[in-house]
Image (tube, rainbow, N blue to C red):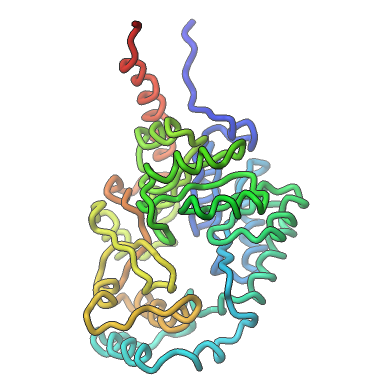
Length: 370
């Protein structure tokens, strides 16, 4: 009887998952589907109020049963102490306010009916503390830090029996991350969507694997097929972290503006751009009128987080609310070129696993006896 091959790495046994494929999404249904398909779903909760985090993590738990899943918060250093929009607005230069007004006038954007996703609250120490408390009180299995990995947060999460993870984009961040005591590291290469760093995935992953010692490393950035997963494993990673792959899944469509779905389907790997115009941090997204406007000669340099958040947050909300097609955009990595149809999470997962197994099995043809 022939043994059937199965995709596996040590993190599967460590975390109790079937496949070493971690899926990040801002959608409850998508995260649950990734976990239920044998991967490890991670919910992006940075822009959620503490009570929303509590409720949404409980909803995911209801959908996945005792299968493990995680939650991701962005915890950048240097944020203001208090959740005060007025204090931030008072420091925004008139030049930037006038540029945003020009965009509103040029595209005839009606006023938003309420604060945008980035202006619902101010990224601040006050909000972060409440979000962290909500995560620590939950039964989520993993606490992931998308930016920053404060040692006190890592220690508190581990004290609650939660696995901890940090995303980093440079070897320079490795010593501080390891010192914080994280259990897993994501090597996030330049190809990745949303907040990303300057070093390509192929250059970054082996360096972080070598520096990490016994701490498992996951590869992120440009991962779209089983061939990419096989390459990540060959570089020493124990799995992959994927975000763009799930944007065009059936489960994610209620969370995605229909115009964004069409733009993602049409986009190739060369149709993304890194801009600070979204949040003040480097952010890879599909190139649209929004990114082009901020690249123009008359555009001011984007402000630091959270000032850029406050500057553009309401406008970004109004753009989607009122269907301003040229300016509607989505974060996406260079792997977007591999996804051009809407499929279920389970279908995507099955294809990834099958391709990875076939690729790894085929690699033996490059070895010969001497």
